[in-house]
Length: 281
Ligand SMILES: [Fe+2]
View (cartoon, rainbow, N blue to C red):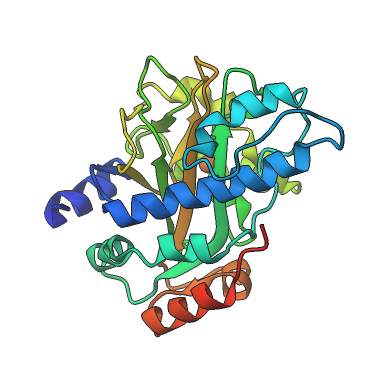
């Protein structure tokens, strides 16, 4: 499934690797269950006291219909990413997939921590938050300047994404431009939130890459890689998830507090987590 030599070579040069059919059927089902759980929670929060719309919460593909409900419930306002820490048993069932440990083996580092950030999102032409600026995920962390602080982002779509659909991920290859080339005075800006807007450097992004992907594939990229989401061209929901794994000698304080050391008692820990986090919805 993963060619070790090519993986390291490409990650080192361009900063990203696309792996086809990364997940097995079981994990794909767990990802769908997680998206359905999330959709259910969201739709419940949109429901009004007196409405006639019957929501079929048992629908196995509820997440694919979220835009219909969004329209029905008068386009309710909500934050794009309502809760960063919404891990539950569905989520841990995804994380236990052995493919994640295979990536750890490939990068050959003694450290492997699942970071506290876990995003599950849907986008649509109808939604105002579907477009993102050019940015670098390192800025999410306080110690973003530390060279010993490293992480990989694993981005996965829940359906096909290509140039016709839009809403995919657009990447600036590391050998074209990356976090490392950002001017020092820029990185010294006091307000960390301001660092997220890298559109001003767009002239430097001579060549970008938009992977064509389907459900089951993953795009893995390193924390120095600059990227953004492309415009959604259709209304149907475009679901994607992104996870982060830290592997440098420095692990962020955020992850020490809220993440999981994947190299320790992995199986035992996850079984415990899966059993302890019962679903409320
Ligand atoms: Fe990002």
